[in-house]
Image (cartoon, rainbow, N blue to C red):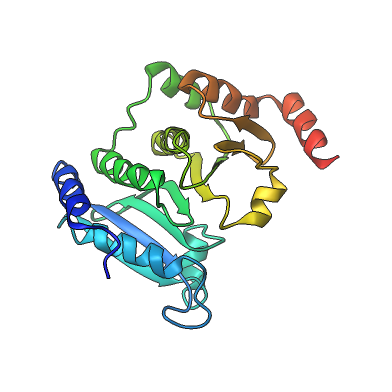
Length: 234
């Protein structure tokens, strides 16, 4: 039984026809078809397989989180189901764009937009944003907590993924909050979207690009970061 009906497949096929460079989708699951398979691993794998079948510019790799632990470590994957989107070629480019949990509901559209964005290699960010993030000197990790029924979450996830594409120092994750309740509890996710930067900068809602970048650049202020860490560790 397919997850995407024919009308959705046709719409996605039309969208993917606009791809420029090829894209590689890398999925991590566990215990395929067995008792150890994680919640939503099978559905995530099937969803991505169905998308990959709609374009000859999409290649799909599927790895087992345990059996292929070295590969998971290389991609920085620490939970499943997980999906990384790479620009394919002789030397595939990993921008640090990640989905943790099934990209269903409103996030399905984000996944398709991400594939097109990675294929273009252009984040479409404001020039001022590119100037600001070029000042980064250390890695920045963005997590955006979402639920499939949140209509505002895709905007927050896509903006985070654009930043990851624009800077080699930024990695950005979509995290489906209900699939990872221990993380939702850790980061006090009481509403979505909730964006967490380097564990200590917390942002509620889908904020505009300049506001997110302004908060992100707090990472360059050691005193401000120290205060935030003290706050969240207390």
